Length: 251
Image (cartoon, rainbow, N blue to C red):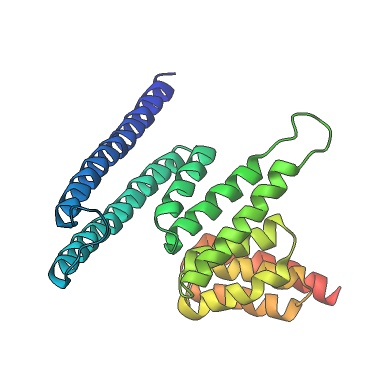
């Protein structure tokens, strides 16, 4: 119970910091907007309307540009705070809360591939742990979150083609959760082009080949693991799985 209380206390502190920063940010922005309005109003003719001469127009434009740049910087920093909060939630296994925080982060930084990867990870974990408490065979929550995980991973890859984590996460999803191993193969091949000695990815690719009845491809991948790894446990596991494939291949 002590551990749970300490964990809850830590989360509350993090939330207080983030929302405190957010509140201060909005108060500051409102104050600055009021100040900007007053400064621009000083440049306006008494009868209203835009500045009447070139020099005043330039001054007004400079004021707007300055504030726009500041707003962009503030938005980027806000995204960072939401991302930090999301990762803290993930560290504690609170994936629903992490996903909510990531939704806010994406709002401020929609082109950040890492936010989509983290969203995919959270959604996949939620789906995997979803239970049908009603007993009516309702798998809506699970299927919806698996679909969200796939969408998020694909978006991360679209934003950064060399970003390996979403490719690996997507492959795990296709092979072990969605029973669509053929779709995992191109992602794993691309992954191994970049990270050539990653035996974790090799194991997943070998499994994908086996599930699609490409036994030769599976055998070659297990052979590659055996040659590559220096871990005796991994080597033994690869040899064991290779024997299983040989039995399936040759009967």
